[in-house]
Amino acid sequence: MTSGSPQLSLYNTLTRKKEPFVPIDAGNVRMYVCGPTVYDFAHIGNARPVIVFDLLFRLLRHVYGAEHVTYVRNITDVDDKINARAARDFPDLPLNEAIRRVTEKTARQFAADVKALGSLEPTYQPRATDFVLPRPDGKPDMVTLIATLIERGHAYVAGGEVLFDVTSMPDYGALSGRNLEDNLAGARIAVDAHKKNPADFVLWKQSSAEEPGWDSPWGRGRPGWHIECSAMSAAYLGDVFDIHGGGLDLIFPHHENEIAQSRCAHGTHEMARVWMHNGFLQVEGQKMSKSLGNFVTINDLLETGAMGGQAWHGDVLRLAMLMTHYREPIDFSVKRLEEAQSKLVDWQRAARDGQSTEDIGPDASVVEMLADDLNFHRASVALDAIARQANREDGQAAKQALGATLEFLGFGRDTLLTSGDGWEEPPHIAAAVAARLAALNGKDFAEADRIRNELAEQGIALMDSKDPETGERRTKWEVKR
Image (cartoon, rainbow, N blue to C red; front, top):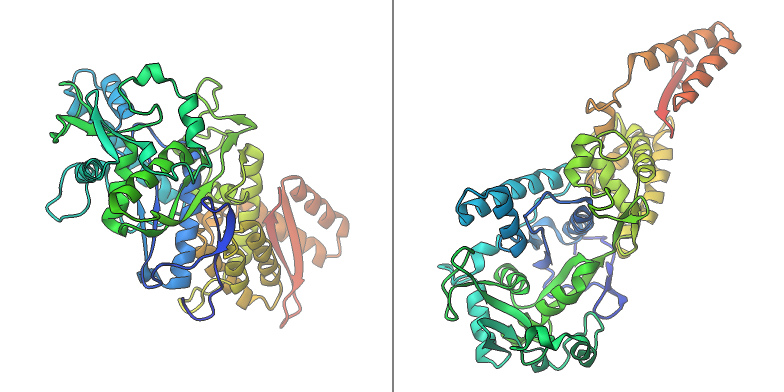
């Protein structure tokens, strides 16, 4: 840990409590987060784990040093949803070529979207298709992991599939809290008659001549969903690592099954020390779905004005996500976006003109709040206090601290003020402020009040002060919504 860094506490889904975070090796803090399945543009729900774990990545880098943190977020580019989308969109192409078209396009769009959200690139972004077969570099792969599970009695071949035997792991279900007996009793045995147990899940499945596939000891086929992350996390982070993250919907079956595969293949008592999950997302109070017409992609919000009739800056989307604690459900709405935009403009305006220097790190009080299980609400209260101080006559140091802290959090210092999206000072506001100053200096207070009220109706608040050296009246303005 760097000198003066606070003690991190993180909520662990596995233990159901918030715990002090103690890395396995402080010189190599390791985190894995499940990334996108690239069959379609990422929707706004996909943005939440990207933003949440980017914030954690930034915090870990601050506390332990950037060179001591490894962050892996995978790309799933083999999946039956991808196959279906490829066949639909490119029916005249061979399936493998169609799949490549789909995955390359959607992966490029995902990279552009998350960059616009202010997210750093992970240390590694492995693709699932690169880890199916044994690799020249000897990194773990899916076929070898599956063979190991069969050899150790945790998997078996049946009905053309390789299946994981959930009863071979006595504490299967610990992450989700699901009782194995209940899972077995509730399963539809008739549908999967070739399984030893109804809850057993697929590690490898056969591929038809029209489907993508790889030659394996069990015939030409393709991996199940869960084994992909077990291979890629082990490839870059080892058999046991510090933090595994993702959305709440991944706890079962995906993360539960990852744990089973990895522990049983590696012979370890854990896969990751801490399991973190962000809450669900609704849009305008309803579950997001195409049938309800409220299915919104990140790109829609950034480019097309899908909510509120305007394109939103990525910094606004980022703040709107962080305003609710990451473990709580979030209602993503136009009102929330407007609140985030207003607050961000306030912070950026307060930080404006602060000198940028590499020697100034993020404000310690903000870091301390985030160290408490990413408590961004309390961190934003601290930011408000810094902004108030920055708005004073002697606020240059606070301006510098606020600007550095905004950058640390993944926000620009003045993206909404100067990016050409409407926040650069409009000429009519500058003219109105100048006219009001002239009225005040001429003691025409009625006209000055009229101009102030007129600007207030437009959401513009004026702040008067005096130059400390000349005593001349000065006026600043900010957007209030």
